[in-house]
Amino acid sequence: MSEQAKQSIFTRYQIFIIAVLAFIQFTVILDFIIVAPLGALLMSTFSITPGEFGSIVSAYAFSAGLSGFLAAGFADRYDRKKFLLFFYAGFIIGTFLCGIADSFAFLLGARIITGIFGGVIASVSLAIVADLFPLNIRSRVMGFVQMSFAVAQVAGIPLGIYLANNFGWHAPFMLIVAIGIPAGIAMMKLVRPINEHLAAAGTERPNAFRHLATTISAPQYTSSFITTAMLTLGGFLMMPFSSAFLVYNVGITQEELPLVFIFTGLSTIIVLPIVGRISDSIGKLRVFTAGTLLASVMIIIYTHLGITPLWEVIVLNVILFAGMMSRMIPATTLMTGIPDLTDRGAFMSISSSLQQVSGGVGSVIAGMIIIRTESGALQMYDVLGYATVALMLGGAVMMRIVNRQVEAKAAATAATISGEVHH
Image: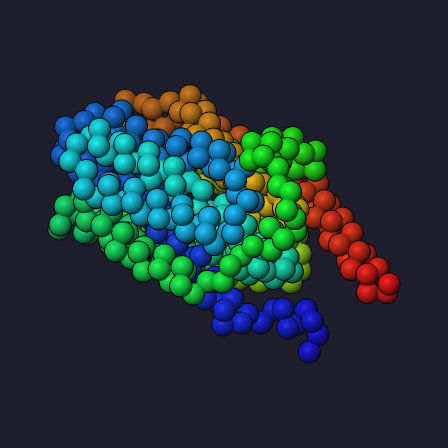
């Protein structure tokens, strides 16, 4: 059996690592997305305005973006396992505080704490995947880890809403704490140290803030950061108004709306592992390009919909998300191939912060473009579609640059190893 074939077969320990990271991601994503469906309950309980509820949602995003940026300088100075456990413990504490909050101010503060710790977890998880899995099988791993979003959408949100309706709005947060603690203990007891980057760095390690500044300003990382910002900005333009567009423009009722997301989530669970495997087989850039073209066509169709039957909306949504997922997995995998081992944690943290900030900017821009009529229908949603496609195509051009960097780095590494062997 060839070395590449051996690498494509996961060991039991690798499967365990993938499962733990996916489950941790699931709890973090569920904590983030469960707040929106609780809006009516929270506004009624605390007698707060929609604007104040919006601050609860945005508090997490902004604190997550800031913490990811500040943590970047420290991300490569510690064992990644300990680094992840520290932030996951803080995330669990913050979520517990959300679950016992008895006022708007208390809950707002708890969401800030949760965001500070939760905002770093995704980037550390990606760094761990990049450390433990070679690039040629990394898309498969990303496919499984990223399934956590789809599972949260399909199973987590309905369960959270059920618990909130029957046991109070605190219940979903307590559920996350209850399932998160065993995951943290399992990682603490069973995951081996992840510290190869420390050995590579040697005994002399730069000051944390100098490391942050050096990583941000490194010319070889600039195109990756620009690409990340473009991809995220495009992804968030349509998102804030997607539900309103389906209800007021497409004619989907509030009762039917969950079906759209459930079927989309179920299809995503199926698509993600397939995309990961294909990306590793035929090339990440090829899959990303194909996904971009498919998603671009579907976005133009989607944003011009009028009154449409539910089944047709579900089919279109499933195809659209298949295109989007076909971009996300190879793009994320290629990004992990850019940074040096000693910069990987900082690079991932900066990228995560850029995603948070770009997503917020995208939401603000979308709010400035969209016009809502007296009937509730949205105007200019097609303009958001065109802008999204433009950003996606621009991102595809930038991704070609990123791919060339990854290939050049892989070739240089292979040449170095070959030279050492012959020597």
